[in-house]
Image (cartoon, rainbow, N blue to C red; front, side, top):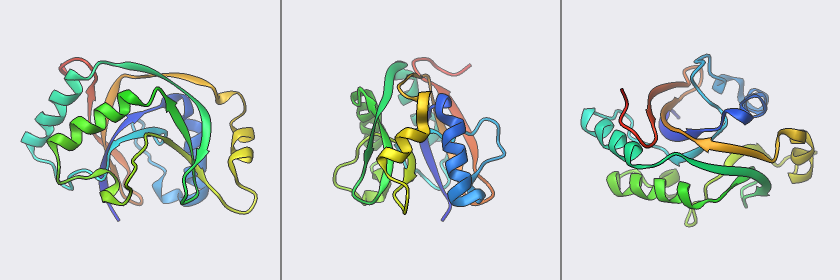
Length: 175
């Protein structure tokens, strides 16, 4: 199913996540050089066809959200088997999502599927021979990684058509 997602890119883990995406579903490996497979979702799914007013609302939220630093080190697994990294601190992501949900209440995080929405960077999924320990070993020296959230991207996720639609710098109005 095709949908848009607002996300914070994490370029330092792009190669790892891109390779895992290719392993699971090569159709979702993007040819767009601006597209970052490694990310922390801010709000998704987002509006299927956002208008100019919605884009201006997102721009205002990005402009009022200061860039922030975070560390990715702790590997965890959700009950559905999604293996992920937990950002530390989580609070700036939680605050960004809250602002977006307030502006777009028709877009509950993850379509309202989960009661407890937690910021995370998806790495893999549990399967035979794949668990937290094997993923942590595969990450090697990539973690811990100190990251800086500097922009918010509106991305389109569709098999064979993943791409960045718009991007806003955090903490300032785009030029």
